Length: 406
Image (cartoon, rainbow, N blue to C red; front, side, top):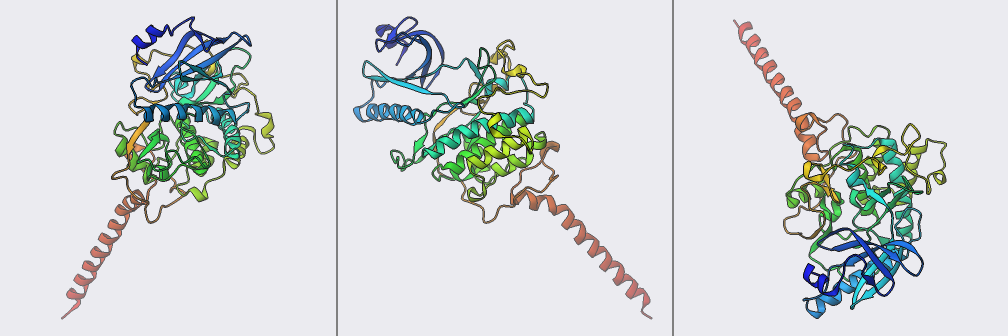
């Protein structure tokens, strides 16, 4: 819906949506619509109202598909009633257009938090990961694959009674088992930096690909960049993702082994989401900790307080002044690739070496990509040195033999 169309319909602050939800202020917006803070005049509570892009001007088939996508998002999210998932309250119809009415959480996303801190401590990231994994475990049990897990979709309450509580949001491109509405699509939907290798190669997302995406997200916030690096060329990035060319974690500490398990290239060897939750909880709480102690709890720093990056009293920097993480993902990467072509995306390698060889040297002194190609390159200097040594020794022996002849 254009600004002119909104103005003609009077959509803005104080607009009464569906005779019930009073719009207050726009919280954010983009190509896929806008989210408003609204007041439920019937139940007297604040809600978030998601206005999906208008179907005005679309042909009937496109308009029908967009409305169905919105209703599907509402149905998928409504299946979850978890402490660490944003709740879906209602689907409101206004002028024939569906709006999603959700729980309002005063918060900042992990992507926004990364504009405050270059990276988050491993123990805090383990807490976040365990809580999100528990919500996604319930989603998977309900037959729902999220498909777009990334820092921008993990929210942390930054004030009020829920300060520090973590919730997963945005099931906009989620799919339930048996839903084949776009199974024949020739595009990949989601965010390339957090794709699993099999999704980058064009396979359908599964619960295992959600596990990989969670691993990529946690890697990003603990390392300061995604596991495949940063590249504004989404096709080049897809090639690295498809070949599982990750950079070995350097700052994850006790979280390293869990991250590598979640980032296993072979989906059959990855943990389930429930196993990922338990592994992350073990890092956060120790061997004797009980996961239930994390449920509904805020994220705590090593000092036992809610970390500064999660608090409203710590202002976000102006993204125009160069924040590395802007909006929902890394600056320079598309927030959502709704139409990433599958042409020329590489197929699986014959064999992937895993786990990555410790200490593999990479570009600029960082840990290098852990693909088979890079391991061959890493061993090439040693092999060359051995060959030269053998050649020199052969020459010396030949000289000695010749000198010894009468």
